[in-house]
Image 1 (spheres, rainbow, N blue to C red):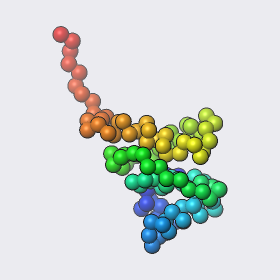
Image 2 (spheres, one colour):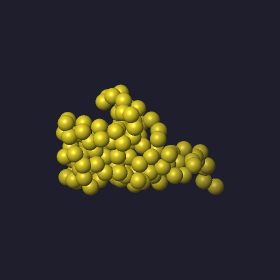
Image 3 (tube, rainbow, N blue to C red):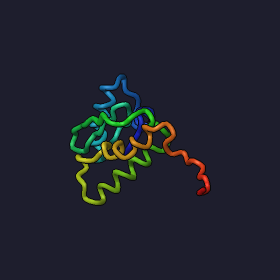
Length: 116
């Protein structure tokens, strides 16, 4: 699952601080045997075995609605191809999405001009 902090709070209850939220993410990932990518400035990946990893890549342009759906799709595609869940987590998302969000006009279609 790929919640941002507020979604995580709605699912698992409030945390008094960021450190407690990370501990809770590890605890819930282990309890439910899931991978939790807690999105943020440096996303935190909580693994079912109790370990956690930080992803320091990305940029503010990725904080858009639907980015978690994109992340889930990319990760699911990688896992279905046999990639280890420890290797790709969110670096795969940021390495593919970052170039598009780093440019001011990324994603905007420019009008085509007819050939001269």
